[in-house]
Length: 440
Image (cartoon, rainbow, N blue to C red):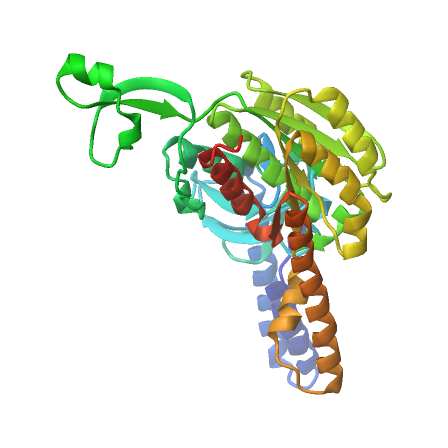
């Protein structure tokens, strides 16, 4: 679709000419000047119209988007523009973004030389999973005399799905393969003891554990030889995600469920890199998804497609049913990483019997969230009586969160209390710590 617009300068000049005609009533000599100016304006407008309508497709525009977008990350979008005119033009581009972004003032301005093209890059950060529909591209071309603007509406509708943060997953995967996870904030935990999974015999170097000396190989070789062990592999790691109403709580535009899904995706990928088996359980009032832990090549794509579809529900999660599913379907001892949230000690104590039974058969790690808004209140100084009261209540809630960690520890359950933005790093830290301590 194409449209024709007269620019503001035409109205300004036309207004000035109209004033000249009005003034010519009192000064007749101005009438001839106004008439000449009106004819010149008409000729200039006609020339601009001809210049921008010389070609049917004066501007060609296309959009390049990734096959899928990553939630919570900056995703690069590119607009490709090409000027079919033989003369330079000034263009304004309006890309009709998906409604989820609620962007009403997106515009980019540039100048294109004759028969030349350019690319416009910009980034989008989706905060919800689902299907995003990109609409048309509108290009406004201003003629050389700046009197006329022509609009080109290019049909560029495309639906793109927003998935859990696979960009974050790939970044951690590359760092894990290169043994550089420290660059992402993952701590290097000391190795306590060693696993019993033998890898090979090698010559002793300074720093090797002298308890691993292989005396028979040393006698045959004539130099000190030691056994080299590797981390135990093929351990089962299940990410369990609560989809109940407590996970609907928002933080910086994303829900706690979205943060948990992103962390579960990264942790599953890291566990596969470490040669462990990754599985998934989601639950609310009923068990929803159960993916058996495995390390086959297609497991990561299966996890990604499954996590893409998960949504919060508004009912309380049933931990007793979760325990029943775990007891019946997970027969060997596994690491269970439960992503959930507790806002009061009473809510934790209600679920404690089921958590204790899970921890009896498996290594259970409960990951729940620190309320950062409450933490900010506790760190601010109080200026009046009302602020003192608010700060006191906030400190009470923050103290109760810390008490939950102690309550879980006293019952032999591992736990992580973390801010949402630190969830992924803290979870990976704990997983690697458990690997180095040979707990799994």
